[in-house]
Picture 1 (cartoon, rainbow, N blue to C red):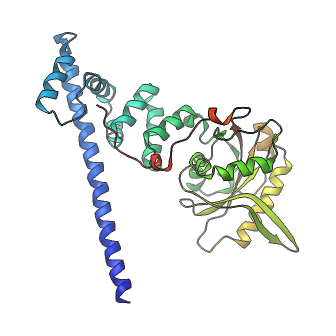
Picture 2: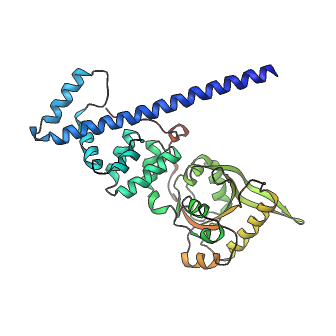
Picture 3: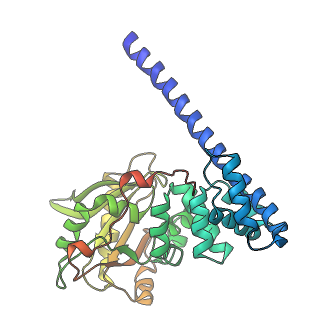
Length: 333
């Protein structure tokens, strides 16, 4: 008993230290971004001194602070750009000061729209995207895919859960780390996804936990097998995923409705929310999918997916490692 108490005390101390370290890093990052903003302000307001002005400042700062990074001529120009972008937008400035410098530069480079930058900034903070993961999400046009599935969430889920679920489900899903032949079967796709489950979870989004594939549920005297079963930690519910190697058909909704009823009856716990279904098809007609969902009382989304077909393995896109998923502070030279 004493040994268990000691372990708990040590665990609590370790948690306190880690929490303090995280807070210190976040505060240090915010201070750094605001320093860059203030330096950008000085440079922007005194830029009439000629074309060598920023170059000369860089030289002086490097001599005065030889052990500090970030004072290259290029980075000073970025500071000026950063200030010019956010000098009249206090709300956005408060948001982006929570992002590492490299993330900020990436968003400024990729998007002129502050609304789109805001979407990516908030997602980065919520999901802990590293810069490489953020770049992948930008390249796969995350902002055009999120909340675009055909679904009945607004009718079948209470607010604000309906909005939350809608903003988690994408269309299409980009599984560009999977390479299959033209005539692949659903089982082949499923196996490929299981082999790349880390990448699948990254594309599905933060909060998804993999439960199993071909997950058996018994109803009456029959056994049924769910293609992929997940649990969403934030939504606190099971997510049933059915894979289709062809275009959407209305009858897929009936099968998903059956699975959700069974999962809710057999697996859902007292404190779990109602399960959600996601039908992933090779392609779909959105109107047909929406008509098929009308009148169904279980929350179901229908999305398409894209994979890298006909490509040799060495040409398929590589997603970041697990370590890249963790948020970190980037400081450019």
